[in-house]
Length: 108
Image (tube, rainbow, N blue to C red; front, top):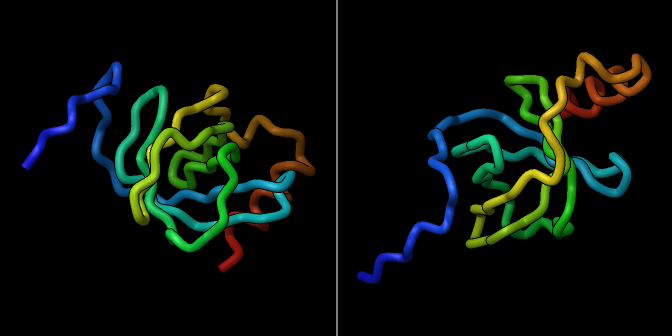
């Protein structure tokens, strides 16, 4: 078995959190699971058959934070992402945006 060298600049903490991926100007959303995280990125799992663009927004449902992200690597249902913006607390967004995010995030 060959060991792949670690390319991350910092350790990631293992977690198990619900997430939501948004793209196409928040018109499309997909559920995901956050498997590990750091201040610069995450590993998420989601349906490998979905057609996800390379850049999207990710909502951490537990923390109530949102950031723009891009795909760094993909392997089956696992995906490594890097943040393109800082995580923002959705409670600080304009009221209309919070309402829209709440409706989208709680849809089945």
